[in-house]
Image 1 (cartoon, rainbow, N blue to C red):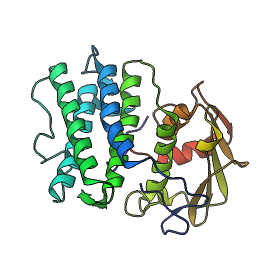
Image 2: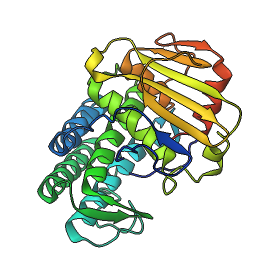
Image 3: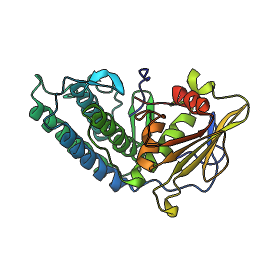
Image 4: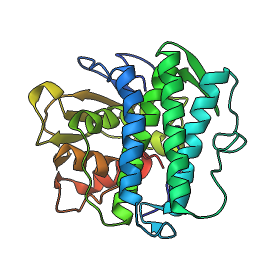
Length: 290
């Protein structure tokens, strides 16, 4: 699997907002701000459970630039960057870089590293909760609401926990609403011209009419865990719903989410790919986050 370009650490796009990707349909409400704050702590705890007793020097197959220890430092650095930007109101120009403590503890003691991650998660969640969803913070080139950063921090952990589980051959489960929200968020960021929508890869999605359908097979109807992505000359649109498509992915929502984030091969026995698999590969090569 090729290394992916670095992503940001969304608010869902509404009908007609500009960019190469647009959302059409009945807007779903993202999870509550406090839920995202809770998940930052909970997901960090589940991540350390996966890592306990593991060799942290092994390479993470889905993020081959990192070892497990490097993955933990990346996550913790992002959390400290979010916390610093929200708490101080000062832009963090170099996420995970010049923020105090962002590099993590010296040495390679796993218990010390796990405690550092847990502390970063708790502090980040507390600051985000105290700030509420309506504030703003700038990290790197992106100035977004605190609601955005809480969602991004929680989903970043959801996805990177899948990386860690894959590296140590552990099982992976996630609440259905979190997996579905992570798919929504990635689609929103792909269509945001300030995040991914202006990238050369996403621009290549323009072309003849084609479509991709994602279908979770294990969720209740009210979650609306189906997505129809329609590509065309102007880019792509997406909506929640069922429809005949050029390519389709069916399976448990956690596995559909992992495929969509390139944390699980599309050829995995855990999902079913129907239609033109090459179109799904085409999309995945161009829309991804590290």
